Image 1 (cartoon, one colour):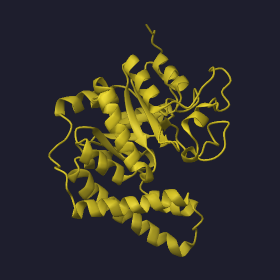
Image 2 (tube, one colour):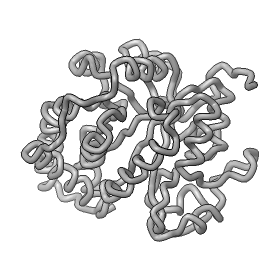
Image 3 (cartoon, rainbow, N blue to C red):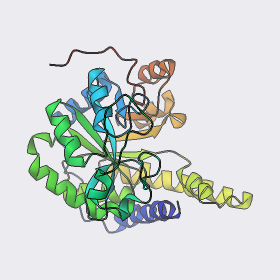
Image 4 (cartoon, rainbow, N blue to C red):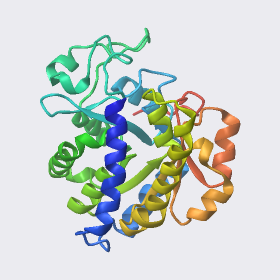
Length: 306
């Protein structure tokens, strides 16, 4: 938790310094045609959040298969790195919640992670494992999907940019079928610097700093106004400077922070919101112009797979 807090604060500093010492050409961005095609898929379908964790073990090929069976065209997944530098698809820094293993992902080798079960209390889905990013991409290519890579932890920034370079070379046919999204502006900054045509999205809940500090055990009432101020300063820097200057392509905003007025205020930036599982909420957010990420993929109409 402390590591996440430090990463967030470092990301805030990085976003400010990147404005002072900017060395990228902000005019370079994904082509309009490619981005419009990408957004059309996002807004004509729901997005399977972690593959649809209500219906199958999150962030596994088992979940991705379930999403495809129910007609989903877009999947959001999370990326962490093993001790030997391999990108794996898992949400938490720890293995404890979603596998039968213990300890940190970053302290485990790929072989150790792949030896674990990721069934996570699902008994009817076969033998699910933590997939590598490559396995997820190959599944997406085979099933004509688009992916949202949610990159966890600013400490993984250099590892991710090297991985991104590698996958763009290995899977050139997939270059317009994914986006990099993150809470961490330093990751988005590096992606825009090194691969400016990759689609990017900034993820935000408007009390993120306050939430992380409180969860880390700092719950003094006297601290809360300062944390609230820190969140507002962060919002100002990000939404009025970093996002437009970096030409970030879209926003992923927690559902509690989204309103019709908010969507209108950030237009023409597309807004994706998470995690929307209630059918009535899904209809509401679609009506106000949002694309929704959902854990529940089984309430969509099934399709026949070829």
